[in-house]
Length: 417
Image (tube, rainbow, N blue to C red):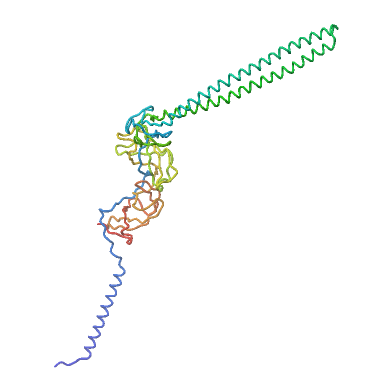
């Protein structure tokens, strides 16, 4: 028969309470510890990343852009008058000289205008001849009048001198002497007037002939203009090179200023490179450049920088110094690399996917022992095509991830595998 022992039951309850409290305390301690643990770093496949090592040494700053080869000697041939395309003599791709006829235009109205201009010139020249003859005749008449008055004056002067001598010897009266002197004075005045009229007539003759000559010159210039326009109906290259484009067709009516053909010298080409406006601020004339035609590279120098921005880019002209590779033709697509400057001794690395020059970005630095990449702030300096200067945040030998890590913006550590 069991006998109840109250003291033993009480001790058991106390032990259970103590064990329960210890268990609860253990659970609380574990929960606090777990809450203080950092979350597990996500795992990233290392083969999908683009890492690089920070280096120290010389760095070449460059910018790169796409472009095309264009001729330095390029000539668009416009229509100088209305016309109809009668015949296309040469097609694009043909080698031409300056006098090669590319196409022929017709304009019946221009032919009529040339004939009218010829008649106007003939009429103006005939009028000039007629006016010249008339003016010469009038000038001769005036000279004859002046010569006759000069002769009468000389005769009257001689008579006055003779009468003065006779009057001195009292062979004639003093009245006769005075009359002869008065007559000589009157003839002197008339002679001076005639000489002035002769000089005025000569000036008038020159002025009238100049007016008529101007009319003739105008008629001749008009005829030359129309004759030149008629000659330009045969459209010539005007430049030795290659015919690149004929943007008109037979039977097409063209107006003055319409481009009829384009001729270029394929032996002299330059590169037009389009550089992003954010990278073009350090461009200067004379900077060396390298043009890749995909069939060879050729060196050159910057000769022009377009001051305007179009579609987010600025156009840079590069003059080519070396011989052109085979296959280098106008309008060929090329890659251009322009050297901005050489930095002798800087800390640099590969250019990250996100990060502009002179900015601070967060990059993942890899611990080679644990293969854990931790995000660190990095201050960037001057940039190039593939490299960028490091001002702070990294040291020589540090290995960083340059790939796009935006998928892990919410974490500061990743585990590489």
